[in-house]
Length: 113
Length: 111
Image 1 (spheres, each protein chain N blue to C red):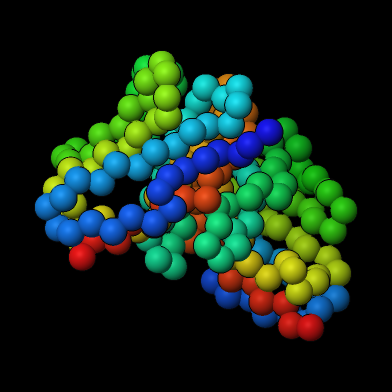
Image 2: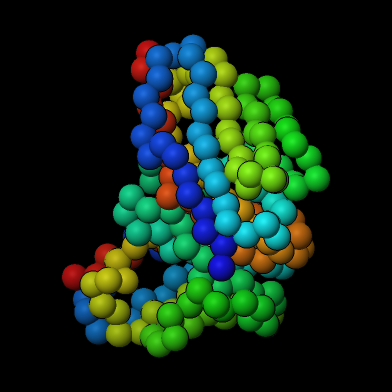
């Protein structure tokens, strides 16, 4: 049973470009969470999604960031017009249900030049 | 919102000694407290968790204690081994929807 799969593992973008991060949850999991981790810091919650629905996006910046979890396919975290401050590790987690353990992927490390 | 503080930020112990990491939280409504271990270049891995209706939980060399009145919880690792070296994060959750993480403790176990 494969774990949470994130790709790419490393992503380099120039300022102003778009970044697309993908997350495939564990088999049987329908809840996905995105977190951001700055160097030497803990993870900060960004958004919680179920299939086709955003449940809680209270941690998402109001501009340039969006997330989706379509009926088919992986969850996507999209960052438009990236800036240097977006450089971080982005982790996805998934769970079976609303009150279940979250399992994390290995993360995508975004570097903005 | 919830605020989780974690201490110490770094901890160095000799192999075989015990390690204790402490966290405090601010929102008394928090009811779920997981601990994660993160190795370099990897995602966080759940090592133990505790719910608010329990005061202590143990799994082999790892234990977690929770004091709801004081709003703090601790991770205890006994008989530490070099492979325990990693960054450990505590977290608190009110509704499982989102976790509030501490800033992490870098544990170094010296052989």
